[in-house]
Image: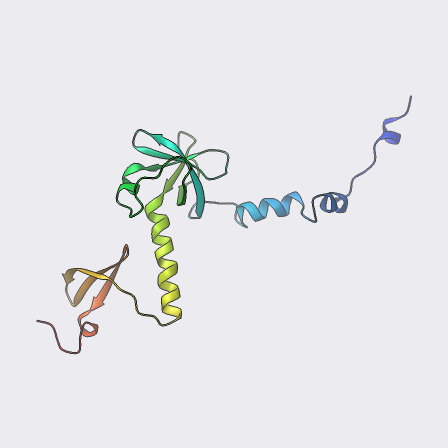
Length: 161
């Protein structure tokens, strides 16, 4: 009978890395979860699984499916999604008390808008908005979902009464 030492051989970290194309488990895990390991606050692309009650169930490729309130889609320009549609969602909470992910479509849209506004700022492009209110010293403006303040001094070349 052969001894166990004769049958087995040691596997080095380099052997594992070579077998998986240079990636170790730690590297793959870091690529998936990032450096801090938290997905809360991240925007992920998910696939709509279905609608249950007042929630849209979305699979973002993790251990559990998440839910988004149906009302968040009814106010969106794209409308209510169907099963199989892909949408971007913001991870509010990785697991709630029921073990489900709490997701938000509105917050994901806001993140997209901020990226667009930042690009416009860097390239010195003008942005269009809708004035929806007057406050002391200026106006409130809707920039595709982001509320901004427009000072009276920037409204026109003539003072507004």
